[in-house]
Image 1: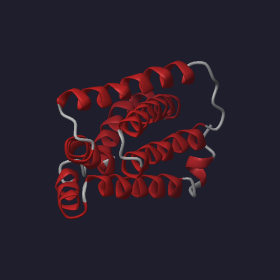
Image 2: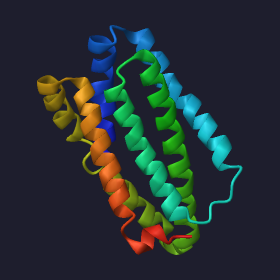
Image 3: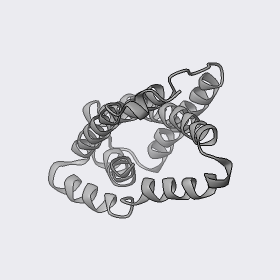
Image 4: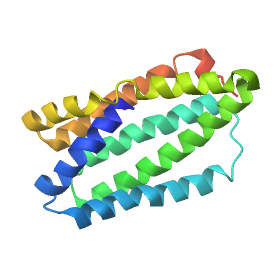
Length: 170
């Protein structure tokens, strides 16, 4: 999550202004494409029954990393629009599967505590991520931040699939 936050909060506005030559309107369209992806993802995930929840969930997480790669490797307006839509789709599908897994597998009496620890762990590095992304963007450019963030996201997400408890989660 930290890699994503740093890239989106710092590198995306820089990518829009310094690489794509756009302004607030372009940034708005690129950001709105996330919502398009979310709508597609929510509609699609509602239509299927997922058996291997852990595997599918983490593949959607890796897809989020692929979207970050697209921002960095295809630094064009169409590339950013596609990356944003993929980002929205992957986040929504991952989120639906994650929350469903929590509600199915965590005893009701512990759900509040588990959810708060989950939220805390997921946002723990969020305050420092923009600082790291800013330093990287300043030295290497905003596109590079997306490549690094994508690599971190894909590697860590796929590494989680090495754990049988995640891979085999129904």
